[in-house]
Length: 397
Image (tube, rainbow, N blue to C red; front, side, top):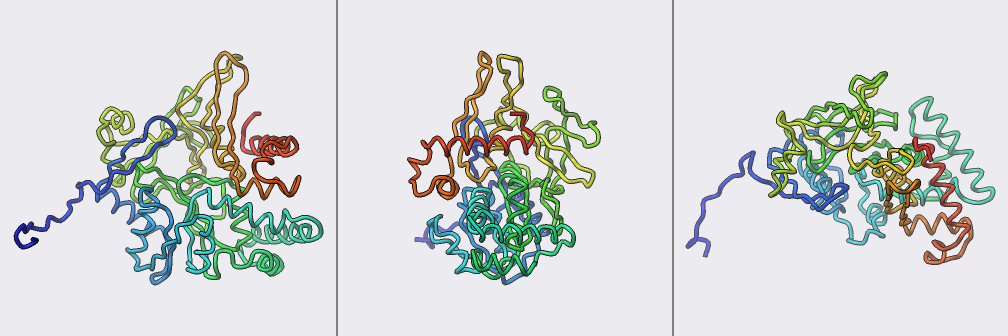
């Protein structure tokens, strides 16, 4: 049949469409992001030059290829000759798969790292009684040592942690890589110190083929998402409605705009939305507000859109509130709603089932999920926790 219907091979051209990846963003219907072969190659080259994964190592693949990070992980592995191990298909067994594969680095998303954070804390510094007290003292000493020296090994804590959690990510893992969304500073610091590994964060969007900014190896500061990716430029545009200006002191602030070889061709069958997102000069307007610190690193501080007033005239950015609280490992989903005729907000919170049960049972003990979410003591403790988390992350309450 092939001989009878022969077709010449047509090599892909740089501007040919590679994939349409759907992203829901934060509002509205899913949008089809059209990425060309050159978009993907630019992103992969950026990832390649910014990482230090040795050839011949192993990496685990569990994110779907409908997710830009899943594509970048596999593309990067192929580029450096890295073995790819595919997980069993059961998210609940992911850590078991990691222990079998023994990867050198573990790229993942905030949800997985939050689960890891809760489970390690529960077994160590949040444990009851004398064991918990010993773990807290050992962790604090290692944290102090790390901040003074930058060293990730500390015998007292490392022995205790190995006894309590074993080699939870295998014996070879040297780095954790978080993409998709910024992770809480507390989670980054704890996992880095508790596991004794390098922790790297990045920032990007599907519209920029996953690129944007990335923390450099050796940077120990956790409050930012790094310097611009090597394949693009970043600029900040004034947002007068939120009082953010690129002339602000000491740090310029504004909407994050990206421009470079990894920026999408546009949205599939949506020219209007494409023109709203990419301006005439080729800058992709992300909708995120950032600031550039004195080291040239980017920090995400707000969102541009979806602003409303409450009855007393207070401006509310629900996405900002949601972003703060979703970084608490106990929270799986959150929705913030407000009405300009009312003086307060309404919020619907869906706990992360596994993390919530582990945390709540330390308070009341021995109850199932359905009972715990209705328990007044647990609910009040969760509200206290979220209030503290909000204030620590700049919310006024």
